[in-house]
Every structure is written in C-alpha cells, then in structure tokens.
Amino acid sequence: MTWTLDQGLPGLENLALIPGTVGASPVQNIGAYGVELQDRFHALDAIDLLTGEVFTLDAAQCGFGYRDSVFKHVPAQPGDFGLAGRALILRVRFALSKQWQPVLGYLDIERRMAEEGVTAPSARQLYDWIVAIRRAKLPDPAVVGNAGSFFKNPTVTPEQCADIIGRDPKVVHYPMPDGSVKLAAGWLIDACGWKGKRVGNAAVYERQALVLVNAGGTQTPPPAAR
Ligand SMILES: Cc1cc2nc3c(=O)[nH]c(=O)nc-3n(C[C@H](O)[C@H](O)[C@H](O)COP(=O)(O)OP(=O)(O)OC[C@H]3O[C@@H](n4cnc5c(N)ncnc54)[C@H](O)[C@@H]3O)c2cc1C
Image (cartoon, rainbow, N blue to C red; front, side, top):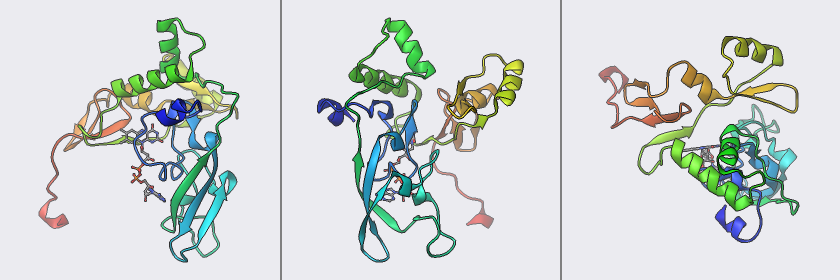
C-alpha cells in the first residue's frame, strides 16, 4: 500500500493495514472503509493445481461478491462455478484511476475530517488516518492472536432500518446504491453487550466488537473429543 502511494498511485489507501498476502486478497474480495478489492481490480493469473496450467481471470470471471469470490466455492460437478482448492493465485493486477477520488463516507473518517478541519484529504492523509483508526481499534495479530474482521455487515430494507432506528436512533447505518441499508455488525454486537465478553479462551475484543480474540492459551478438549 505504501509502495503504491510512493509511486504516486493512490486508490488502495482504504485497504491499509489489512493483514495478509496479495495472493489471498481476491479470495474473500477484501474490503474496508468503503473500498473492496474488486473496485481496484483488473485481472489475476493463477495456476490450475490439477492440470498445472496457468490461466488469467478478469473481475467478472472471479465472481466477486461481499467477502466472496469463485475461489471460495467448491463446484458440485465439473464445469460448475467454483475454484476452491483448485487455483493458486500467482499475480494480481490492479487498475488504479489517474482521476483519484477519495472514499470518505465512513463515520470514523468523517470524525477525523471534522476533528482536523480537513474537507479534502490527500491519499497519504487518508492512509495515515485509516492506519491510526485501525491501530486504535484492532489488536496486532503479532501481539494478540485474533481472527480479525470476521463478521459480515448485514443489509436490511429501508423499512427494517426505520424499525431499528425507532428502537435505537443511534444505530449506525449506511444507505447503499441499490436502495438497501447496510448496518454495522460491530455496532449491533456492541449494542447486545457482547464487547469484551469471554467464553472459554475465546473472547470478543474489548475495543472492537467485530474481532474475536484468543484470550489466552489453548483449550484442552474434553477426553471424549480427543
Ligand atoms: C487483525 C485482522 C484484521 C482484518 N481486517 C480485515 C478487513 O478489514 N477486511 C477484510 O476483508 N479482511 C480482514 N481480515 C481478514 C484477512 O486479513 C484477509 O482474509 C486476508 O486476505 C488474509 O490473507 P492471508 O494471506 O493471511 O490468507 P490466509 O488467511 O492464509 O488464506 C485465506 C484463504 O485464501 C486462500 N489463499 C491464500 N493465498 C492464496 C493464493 N495465493 N491463491 C489461492 N488461494 C489462496 C487460503 O487457502 C484460504 O482459504 C483481517 C484479519 C485480521 C487478523
């Protein structure tokens, strides 16, 4: 991410600090702060682990969805949609627009803009904010074992959203281009009082309700399960 910024190629800054390899990024169509991999994706090369052949897929062939792609689906029969366990991604090509437009429509980013009195941040500034926001909220996997961002944000109809707002006006929600409304899963979990809750050695991180952490050690399974 910093490399692309250093080359004067903004566009990936909202994905800052998502841990993992470039090769894994299309698998769940990684996304954060209003940008998904598919928004900046051009094509990828992969090797077919059955035949050894290298092939190229464009975005449509990758079947991107919300934290989803063809690489997560096992075909029911040969020729069906799905390349899980079959394709090893070797190279990912990104398409970064020369007419850069910042993606700012997230509460945390809006707060930063208001705090710092900035209405048109640079890509580097946006990158720095997102790194700071994530560092403040997410545990470093090198320090606290964790599964990271595990839940999907649910989408509801505008009527369902109005019903939820009626019960709690503070509910965090984002209108989507298709008319649905996205709710923040972390906010919902927090509202249920689960932030910081521990069950055995698994816990909901006390600073971010989306994150499941290893609260310490390994669980010895009961004798029957061994
Ligand atoms: C603290 C934390 C925060 C996170 N935040 C986010 C977030 O904001 N947004 C988000 O989308 N995700 C997030 N994640 C999830 C994680 O970062 C992504 O899923 C990332 O893509 C995982 O990369 P990895 O290299 O560790 O892949 P792995 O976890 O090792 O693999 C993931 C899957 O991809 C397959 N795979 C890996 N490499 C390849 C390859 N080259 N070719 C084919 N298949 C492959 C694996 O077999 C596996 O099925 C977060 C995780 C953590 C721990």
